[in-house]
Amino acid sequence: MTDWIALQALARELGAMRGARIDAVHLDARRIVLTLRERGSTLHLALETRQDLPFLYLLRHAPERQKTPGAVLQLLRRQLEGARLEGAYAPFGERLLALCLSGRDRFGDERALYLCGEFFGAHADVVLAAEDHVLFVLHGRRLAVQDAYALPGPKPPPSRTLRRALIAPGDLIRRIAQGDFAPTIEEREGKVHDAWSFPWSAEGALRPAEGMLKALSEVAQGRLDAIELRELRGALQKRLQTQRERALRTLQKKQDEFAETRDLPKLLRQGEALKLHLHDLPQGLQEAHLPDPEEPETVLEITLDPNLSASENMARIFKRYQKLRTRAAHLGQEIEDLAERVAVLWDQLLAVERAEDAAALRALRSEILPQDPEEGQKAQRSGPLRFYTPGGHEVLVGRSAKENDALTRSARPSDLWFHTKDRQGAHCILRPLPGRSVGAPDRLEAALLAAFYSKQRGGSQVPVDYTFVRHVRRLRGAAPGFVLYDHHETLFVTPEASAIEAIRRRRGSSRS
Image (cartoon, rainbow, N blue to C red; front, side, top):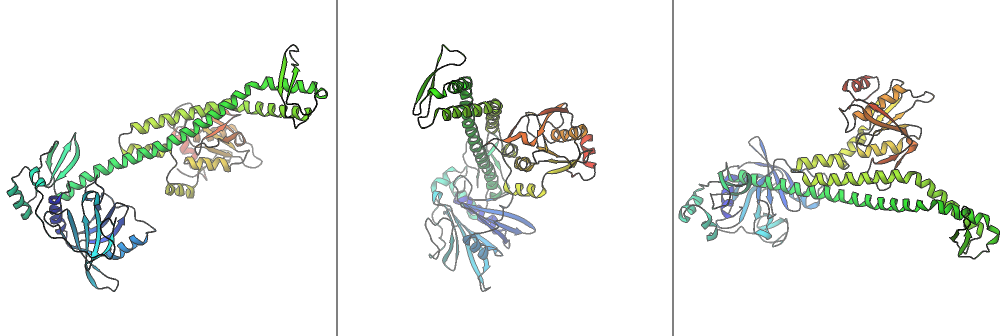
């Protein structure tokens, strides 16, 4: 792909861009990107050192400019921003390309700069040199700053590259010297696979390209999309697997607790037996054998703490009984909710695995994971949506998982909480005005908003649960916005657009 012949073609094309100005420099661990302004157009030229990508290509969009650049990037910006392209040099037979630039030093004097891509396979590097010494090295595998640097001269071309061309070697050398290239793209299974400066013997179909740089850019874009797809998929899978493992651990813990509640009748009988025989048991016993109060012919084996008296052991058993009985009332629902969450996470993992492109994965990420920090800050600044019911009560609607979580946490215990039943959606909080009761029309409109800002938008007879905030609790370790609730009632509503628009037009309501 990026062999010495391709670099010869690239040098010709870049030489035709003489006078282009470097407006910005972007740096990451494996490449340098120059934003060039040339004849009213802007190009983003990448010098790449990864072996799975072309060594020189154009990006569709410039990378995001770093707001807090490090010392190395500041040096590059001082040296390169404002410099102009004077030409490009590629030694015959060498895998090296130098961008010849004219810039200015710190005193404002003009000087020549060379930004050189040394494309030597695993030892590829990018070097910035001036006045015969090195100013910057991307990786520093062969050179260091302040080392002497001289551009190499031509050398005999490797015969292996000449043999691949579908042109006689003598004619090929002549055409390279004259700049008579024939950029070609190789396609396999309908996708861009590689690019060549001349038609090569290849497995796929060959088609002509407009130029060597554009051909390499097509290859790079396809491979960058594949890299993004792989990284997005891996990040999503890792995040979802972590959440699923955490949910499974919590589910196992709850199931173990639920298994303990099966001993409630036995614990109660043990406590009652101790109560009947308090004065018969001396302190220091580790175990007591007492008749069952309900079945006197049955003997109960009761484990005791020898450091406690009989009455203290009895109190401890009754306390444990009360605790387990209270937990038993909620554990069943918690286990059911956790099992559903585990199933949802598994479905999401399958959806991530089936996604065919980065756009589909980004859409999945926006649905199943918290938004990125910048979007989160914007949502935080804008706050939840605000509406008012016919009775003048305020209804707040969360816009994201994190905002739903914050909204429910900050609500008062006496506020009403609305959410679509068993479906993803916004948390809606109805805040009653002091001294004014909440009527059925108020609850109906809050339920309409909860249904409209959910996955059930456009549905009919959407079930919406509502309860007081004091009956809503967040499960430890659960994702933002995931809660459990009880003591609820259900309304069935149809979130028609006309009804929602009427709510929005009410004075004081905010728009989505």
